[in-house]
Length: 239
Image (cartoon, rainbow, N blue to C red; front, side, top):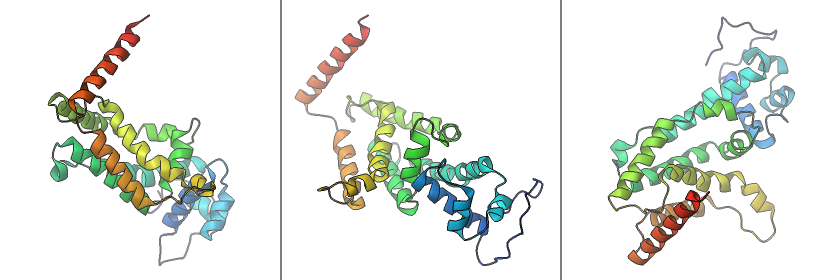
């Protein structure tokens, strides 16, 4: 993508490399370093060094840090959101089980192609004070989340999905089941006695949790869940 020629540019020689997009390369490098070290701990000089360019070159394409962060959100993270939430009706219809499992597939797909995503999500979006949080809050497709929750609720009313689930929280659960283990994999790998995170095993684990957790429990379990929900409701009504 070419820079906006109408915007003022700092001094710096225009690159002569023709066989690859220098700007994309620098943006990829910055995104990876932000995920590994955090935005606050990453300097322009470090980005330039890792990308094999000068600091002036970085400033040529990204006038300041705010412009660079905007590019990370607009050209990297926003594309992830669009991919994960692109319409699924033609693939899964309105089946909430199929919808949920398709979200899982897309999350594993995109994190395999963009391994920087889980740690960046944890560092700069989930954490209080994350420097991408406010930018990403504007990108959350609330209409898609609400539609997904509505399908789950309709299936609950039809008796085909576990009534103990909270529809709005189901997407949060799916996101956490996939992203949290991947974001913290290095911590577990450094702990003695714990096995290395296996993406295939995690994938199977998440699918199993959803497939069985969304199923309607047996009658006795359903009565227990109803009683628990009634007790919880009674406690919430107490002053």
